[in-house]
Length: 499
Image (cartoon, rainbow, N blue to C red; front, side, top):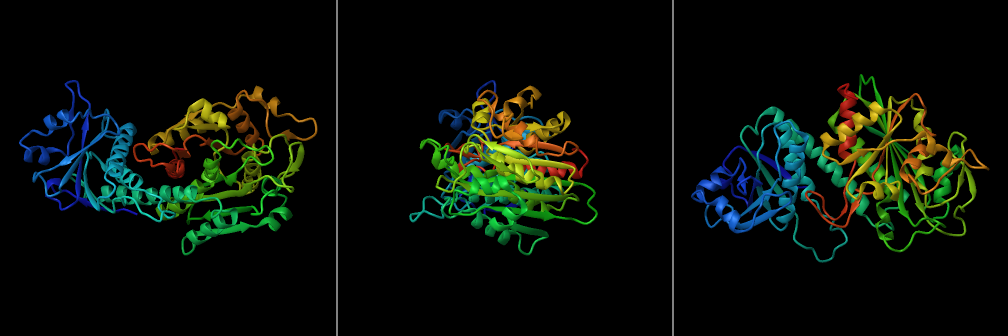
């Protein structure tokens, strides 16, 4: 991972491969942002003029590079657009800084070291810039025999007051969160032949070894004995058997308990309800929810909030074969509820049903599940926005606010009671699909059946933003690690009695 240093020196005097400064749109064309002063002075106040001549506008994600010609010790300067930049303390400002840092670092792949002199007004700004650097510098090259331009390996965050204790703490938090997001990205990007349910369980076990976390893994025999009919049913068509992973963080003097539940379909062919070939290659990302909850709980154990956290990852591979479950089969999920499986491609809700029912036995104060659950959520919200549903309006509002402060785009969706009848089955307690109208909401209503009504619950449908074929800001092509930052923020909000 990219190493982070802090400096209050002028960026022009730092021996790095490139200096990053910022610009924003202005009524008269372009505004130089704080951090550009020493470079502009060395260029005889011509920096803005040069940028205009190069066509810079200051819009978000825009990166303009040019040689410094001795105006700085670095041979290259990269001016990144932030778009409109709000006031200090505004989450929108922090996201603009995060995005700008990431876009610039991505554009400077091949540079060994950079200095990032974006406008830092407070500790949160410094944390956002650090996150942007770490997320933008990410690359997944394990399977490439010929390496491309290597990612930036060292970055210095530059600004007045960056050596203050609260700034250092914010940067340290950002490093932990950034590492967690990138870990989730690695898992999502790993080819499914190498990341089977068992392989993921082994990776999680290795990750938590030597930490404050405890882990339990149920194999296919334990799942069958325990009555986990959803996970067994989805996984029975694959040569790679399913797993249920439980990771627990139990700090001293914790008075609240949050449970995180993640969908972990390591590859989703659709089962006998086979998906079309177009887009199936992205189905290695169908375990993005499981990746998020395991990565988040690991980061939380390092951050140390006084909240107990349990993470469940329900892992299976959904494949067609002679042993696969069939449309019209009836399965019994954990706790005894029977489910008519009308579509084997609506499998995520089946493994989550087991995990949610099991999570209720831990008697948490709040359950948050994360799943690449429905194409309907993509139709409703697009590829960059996740949906939020909850069994309590206040929880939904607060989870939305946590996501906004974490810098992740999510939007509240309802759980209309009148849609529940769409899931009625003539042969079982519930069917796993209804009709096509409001499909994401019906999926949420299905999951709600397996949550104790007295327990607060939120559902994050990340089907859209979990994987991208077009890089943007601090997000590279492929797995995005979405929801990790929101989950960390949610638990910190619970610790602070904000949720």
